[in-house]
Image (cartoon, rainbow, N blue to C red; front, side, top):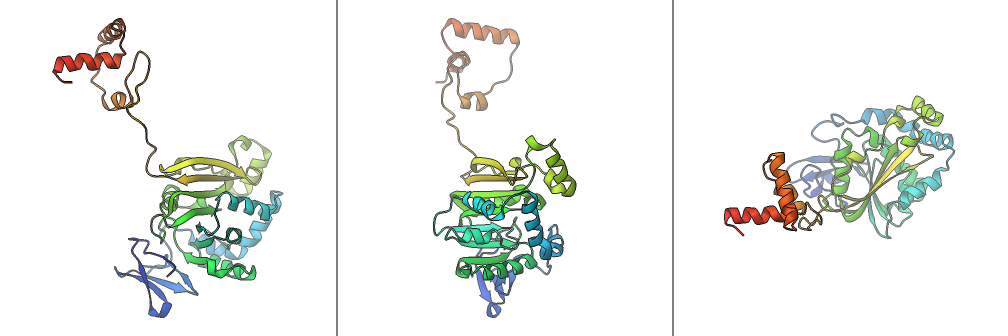
Length: 320
C-alpha cells in the first residue's frame, strides 16, 4: 500500500483484513484507520514508550489557533513564510517528498503546490484527522497525498525512497534528535535534501528583550539549533533563522558516509609527510634531544623530516 514497508525490518507489507491492516511476512500488523496506516499502534500498545502523543492529543484542537497567534505575534505573514520553507527543498516537478511531523498539514498544502507527491506523517492521529480535513477543504489533489502515523525515529520506508524530507515545528521534542535526522537522511536518495527546523532564538539575539519575552512565554525558544545532531553523511549543511530570528532552519544534502580525504597528498615544508604517514604511521616518542638531531640532519640533507625518517628507517630495516 503506497510503498510502505515494515519500520522494523524494512520488508514489504501486504494489505490484509479487507484493507483494515498492513501485515509483514514476519507477522507485524499495522492497522489502517480511515485510510491512514498506523505504524505506532503495533505490538499491542497505542503510543510509543517515550513519545509525545499525550502532549499532541491535548493540543490537537488548539494547534491551528496557536499557529495563527504565533505568526501575528512575530509580525509575520504565514503564507509567504511557509512558501519560503517549501522553496528551501528545491523540489523538481514530480518529486516525492516526506513530511514528518506534518501536524494539521499547514505545510503540506504548500508542498503540494510544487507538483510533488507528499507522504505526510505525524505521531498524533488527532492531528492527522484535522490535516485530512484541511486538505479536503483546500481542494488539494488527494491522489498526491499519503497520510500515515509513525515515529520519526522509525520510518516505514525503504532506503533512498524520497527526493527530499521536511520537518518544521517539533524537532526540539523528539526523544532522539540525532536518530530522527539520521532516519530522515536514510530514506532520502543521495543528493536529495533534508530540511528541519523548530523554535530556537538565534544566539545574536540572546540578550535582547525580544528573546527574553519569547523564552518567558515558551521555554522551547531557549533551544539552540542542534547542528551537532546532523548525521555525518550530510553535505552542504546550512543553518538560517526565520520568523524574526526565532526559529532555526537546518538544511543539508544527503551524501555517503563521512567526507573523504586524499591521504597521500604530500605536504610541503620541513615536516613533510602526508595525512597517511602523519595519522596512521606515527611512531613511539623519542627524547627532545634526539628529535632536534633528526630535524638538523634532515635540514642538512635538504629533506623533510618525513622523507629523512623514511629513508633512514628503510636503510635500518632493509626494506624499500
